[in-house]
Image (tube, rainbow, N blue to C red):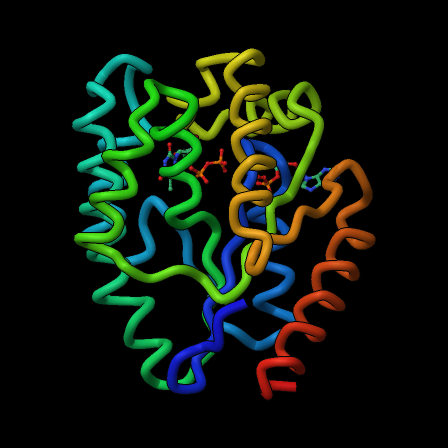
Length: 211
Ligand code: ADP
Ligand code: TYD
């Protein structure tokens, strides 16, 4: 766990589509009185880029173009929303961040993890202080995600085998960054999961002097 800079705390939620991470991000932000944000999006410019990414055909962009669009959106989100919150000493909770690009673009699509890492170092250069991976059975998650019929199903339309590869990617990431990433069993009730997330967050904040 890195020590948060200048008093702000940056917490992210990650997981496959339909895992329940948005629900948990919202609940934790409410419990902490923290600012809630999301990716792709989280600032007016990044929300415009979001539409290019989540709507339309699955094969609309090459893997390289997709990485550039996610990174462009993240850079705007960082400049306009995340950094100002942290510099003001606030807690900010984001529904997805750079780990999503590492997994979706870097692992599941075409082995472009090295490109993802280099762009991240060049343009973003910030990791969350704490990350929750909500780990939910891919079949359950896919059913929940498609049931929403949000019109934002470009990635969900890639199917169950893709969701299974993503799940493996998130678990591998948790092993790669054991200091900041906590895996949470998402196959339980919303309230049970929220209680575990809140307790873990309180522990981490107390250790960083935010208790
Ligand atoms: P994600 O952001 O990971 O795609 P959401 O939080 O939007 O997931 O949840 C997807 C759907 O599943 C929503 O309809 C939500 O109400 C429902 N849901 C979320 N968490 C749970 C849970 N623990 N058990 C059952 N349904 C859930
Ligand atoms: P999101 O709105 O979180 O969708 P969901 O609620 O279904 O999980 O994210 C939209 C899609 O964008 C989702 O399928 C994951 C994908 N995505 C990436 O491929 N790379 C990224 O860097 C991010 C942030 C999201």
